[in-house]
Length: 293
Image (cartoon, rainbow, N blue to C red; front, side, top):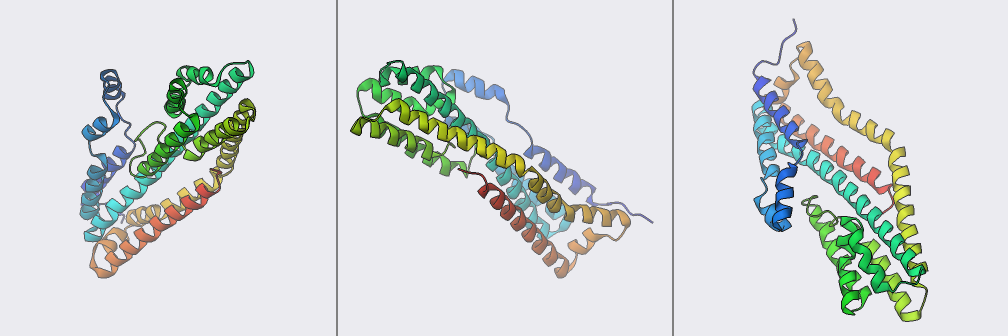
């Protein structure tokens, strides 16, 4: 006779609720109102609901109700792994979008320089570029307008972007262009400095830099498309233990009871969760290393 999940129903419902919160998008209304009011990003972050601790608490509570003390440890760990993967994917999309806007801005600046425009005038057109390009090249435009060295302003912006990269490990939404690779701005600064010091054609140097960024983006897109199969395989292998437990529960063997009772079951649960999390993070690192930065 096939048995049901019994008392595990409320815990499963709580776990499903926690999983749904992971996919919940941020409401756009408060962000638009904050932008109209001129609220800073740090102030918005201070008022943001602490989703991470709430999800960890829900995962721990659901794990405890479903699988006992070991489940209380494995639940928050599972939430942390899922959030880490989601945040890394979001940061990667932001990085690619910012690099694409920077390449487009460099293409526009190059075209204006080749028509005889002054570098300061070409940089002034950044107001018509994308929002991420304005954030990245804004300090250079201000420096050129004030007569200060542009390479120094670009390098300061690159240092700020590097700090944004480090902060993105804690919060991938820290800034729209805060997750762009600082090496792109370093290349632009090096090209500008070479033109200032040695008289090399600035348009040619910036054009080469923009072409390099576009090639890297195109190469990354091709590699990610080719890795779609391995990513799907890794996702299926990650979910197989859960499918096995669910199938065993439906067949009446009660694997949840085995994992919930006794030191052996609790130890097997912690070991299995730890090995699964390690496999997810390791496969993600291998696949991410295949994409050019």
